[in-house]
Each structure stands twice: as structure tokens, then as C-alpha cells.
Image (tube, rainbow, N blue to C red; front, side, top):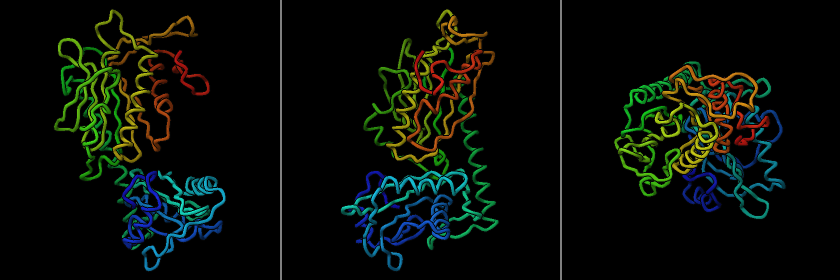
Length: 388
């Protein structure tokens, strides 16, 4: 794999592959031509793509002539409509592999209408993935010699790995919520309800996986807690902690960035116990979560954390809370939350292009359900956030 963000790769990076005689292997493969519409070509293309996903990820590069596994010439391919060509092959991948994989495509101009096409495939944590193209039904992986079909024992190991990962994620989240319920927080916190947002990249549970914290240590302003206008930060054993202070040396919001890329954000001012009535500010808390999730995802992208990422939203200490709305505008009964903990089903995010409001909307709907409403009325019927 080319050691660079896909959107930053240019012709000089491709020429370096040639000058350094970078050979094909587990994470990179060269092809002179894009696949045709023939059954054999498309099956081969899908096998190549899925093999990267089931192994360590990698780059499948079209437009490079190879000799004995090394780039001989950077020729490029003359394509009239590049965007249309990319969409064509992206659709082939989406329709021909299950479960769906995470990948990205880039065309790098060589000269004139000639381009190199790079298909970057992330290592999958929810596999194994199989090719399902016109009756072809096989699983592939890769080693230094290239792709190969998985045998029965390898398939069992792959499925077990996926199950183990699910258990690890749920264990981490459950343990953290238990600690938060017990007020075992990294610093003194406001009394009352808490809004908790977890972002858990699946690759965080890869053995010895660590992110570079220096971009945050050097620019701590990037690690902004939920609902905070000013904040401090410190390095701790777990990674980097940002927190927003308040009265009596207590914090009302913090964000912990773990060394393995996990983000835990906790906010307590919006559900403060000091109010006369217990309520959820229906507009404010949705605004703040949408804004914060956008910032958190921008941060994980900048840190080079790959998708997918699991998102959890949990409300703690909310027994007796109600949704603060103008009830005259709604038809039907309402009531107070009858549970102290609302643990909402997770959402798996597969692309950085996904809008935060679309990620959070099903969770918002469930919180409104818990308060007796059909859905969040801050969204219109088309799914647009309208802040009513």
C-alpha cells in the first residue's frame, strides 16, 4: 500500500513505486488495464478487491505495466469520462461482494486524458467477505504471493475473529458505562444526568494498534468537549483528556482520546440536576451532538483512523426526565423516562462521507420514543434537521 492518504497521492508517488522497484505483494498489486465487461475479468476484479479486504487491506492500481511483479512503466489509461468510469466499478464492487466492504477510489492524472486508477481497500473487521458474482461464490485472502481462495479452516478462523471483535467492543462499552454510572470519572463532575458518546474504531482492537497523539498534543484546540466554549487538556495514562470546567472545581464536559483511537465524550450540564424540573433540552442537545460528532469524525480522519467506526449514544441518570417541547403542537400523550439508563443500539459508520445528523437520527428518535413521542420532531419527513 502506498504510505500516503489516498487523496494526497500524485504522479510523483507513482513514479517512486517504479524507481524503488516496489514489488507486488500482500498490500499492493498492479494491472495494466481495467477489467472488461467479461465474466472472467469481473470475477477476477472482485476476487482481487475482496482478497485485500480479508487480509491487511491494500491498493489495487490500474494503468501500470509490471514486469516480474515490479512497475515497468507508468502508462495510465485514456478514459473519456473518469467520474463515470469510477462509478461503474464502484457499483460492481458494491453489488458483487458481501457483506459490503469499505473502499475508496482515486484517479491520478498522468498526462492529458490518461489516468492511473487506484482502488484502496481497508482491512475488514466485519468479514470475511465473499464474491457473489453470477454464481461465483468464494472467499479470497492474500499473502506475499498474491490472492488465494480461503480453505475451510481459514474461514472458521475469520468468522471467529469477527465474533471476538464484537464481544470486545461490547465489553469495552459496558465496562465504561459501568464506571460512569459509579461516577468513576477522570475528574470531578457535575451531579445529574450525563450524555455519553462513544466512537469505537474497529481497528482499535487490532493487536498493538496505537495512534500518533502528537497532532493533538501540539494542537489541543482540536479536542473540543461537547457543549464547551473553553477547555483545558492534559496527557494521561489513557491518552489525551480535554475538559471544560465550571463551579466548585467541577467539570461539566470532557473528551478522552484513547491511545488506540477510541473517543469517549461525556456531557453533564445539559442534563443538570440543579434545575427545578428534570428535562432534556430537545433542540440544544441534538444541535450539540451533531456538531460534536462532526468534529470528532474530522479528528479521527485527520489521525488516519480507518472506517468502520461504531457509534454508541447512552444517557445516564435520566429516570424522571421529560422532553422539553411545546406540547400543544403535538398530538398524543407524553410521559417521563422510566429508566435510569438509556443504552441505545449502536450504529456502524462505514464512510467519512456519512452526515452526522443521519448517523444520530435513529438514536434521537429512540430518546423521543422513551418520552412518549413518535420520533424526533427536529427532523422533517424527508430527514432534514429543521430544529423545531
